[in-house]
Image (cartoon, rainbow, N blue to C red; front, side):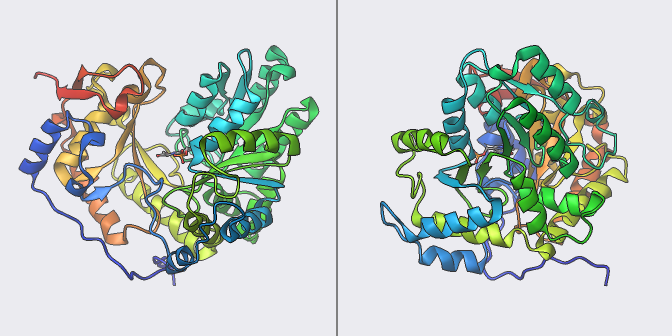
Length: 450
Ligand code: F0G
């Protein structure tokens, strides 16, 4: 059979609330046309993020009941440690309350002013945590990935020549680590090939620089390698993931993505001295190393999630349902970042709404219109979020894991196509007030006058 189905059935449901277009118009006004300011109960389909929004399985809920809440030496920690060590091979496993806490600790220990950290593309918290130490964060995506329409199988790869040039220009002693983000979230949720990871590993070894993965979506990346990279067609996602981790010296991880957990993160390393320093910082702000800012039950949910996420049936469905959304809107003329990524579809709003200039935020205008029309929440990744530094004006539709069904996705396709149909009437926005940094979270906007 060709039909790919959701490989689960539903045991517990959460009702959705419907609002009318006129109610949504009022809610938008009150929220200052900023979708972060909406109440979740006023949203029909929430595609703001795939982070912390997964549906947990019966096995995860059952594991939660056996959470060992001991302050030190919790059994739940040892279960998680065993799972992570078997999967990644990393010697030291440090739990944190979410991904950015792992980033903060890692960079606080490794980075200082004058340092540079390269990445295929830094996620915004990664960049912010590096810059907070006084170091510089440099993105080295493939030059060809700048074209949203280019259909490359591994569009998330790092530009290895640019990496060599950066090391040459900066000096290896001023590069405390090299990072690669799998999948490349800010670059459109695009995968990184094993070949690219191997090439980065070789460069890192040659210069004696540690190599870390930002492994938030490691399982989705493994599936793309199996589907697209010669030599991996029959391999299990677990074996592919193991090979990816074996190339690195450590990783940061947000369990809110590919571990189906609602909270949690990990910092892993093979370096024993570094792990000691990291644990000292952990105790200062996160907690004792056998819980790291989490409850014992959270550690259990992560351990079970890390096993479930590598099931081939799940990954096949996951990647196919994201691609289904992407293809159905792109084949009807909606410009998306091609090819569809793993956890999200990115609409190229700059291309879809060429009449709206960057300073009137085409991505945000589209996000507002999609909510107004259909009650769908998405997120702008463009000039509102990044200001002058924005490379594209995108709208991200992130798909929570195991949460929405095929008919929800069909509703979404219909909504996007209807908005696309009447795109000429969409108005740009202007800022009324904004905070000094990370303005997209709380800026207030209004439609520009006709
Ligand atoms: N790295 C990547 C690639 C991410 O996508 C995220 C979070 C983090 C690190 C930080 O992890 O949220 O647990 O502290 N991404 C979410 C998103 C927020 O919507 O893309 P965290």
